[in-house]
Image (cartoon, rainbow, N blue to C red):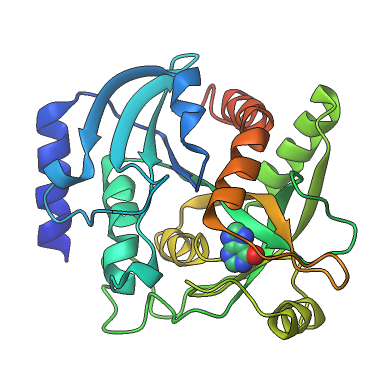
Length: 274
Ligand code: HPA
């Protein structure tokens, strides 16, 4: 694993001098963030040794290096999902590489179904915690050089970044919800009984990504921040058949608000320290 990571890192470093401090993962229909930053270099996933590739519509695959207000960052434009048939190790491999490129924090976005009855389609939800219903990506031999066998998850989502984002939302008058994200494998959306179950066990939203990446990031002690766009509702009385297209459209509509929050979060939390 370490050898493969080094090969990926060496390749990236042969293509760009960028030394990113922050990694971002953009979810379904949320790929336009890159229009708001100064892009320096774009590497398609297929060009990077050992990177998995996505074939899903709305998930282009490229590592985009750039800056925002001089702060260097790297964006994963598109991600691969467990439901595509990749192993957990494959889907989280890019996070290992980003860590070894030097990032300090991982910011993640996704599309999710809302179960909290206060939620509406188009809402943004700051993820305060998660419930993992997918296989754990750390199952298998532990790589001690990367992180501990039994990582703590008591503060998986960085309290400082969460508080900062809430303050920013207030200042910008962007309405945000907060809540617990339940991670499922998909690819089916939930039955009414499943949405109900996820609500009863404490979930506010459900989706098919983010948690494997956050677990791997926490294993390596990266600060994590994540935000969902609520693209459909799994609420009794408000359930409607869902399509991938509906999810993408709802996410695209919310994207400008999400981008504003992320840019401010970056500016305010990563401006000074080295
Ligand atoms: N369930 C699971 N994943 C999702 C959903 C959903 O309702 N919406 C967007 N991604």
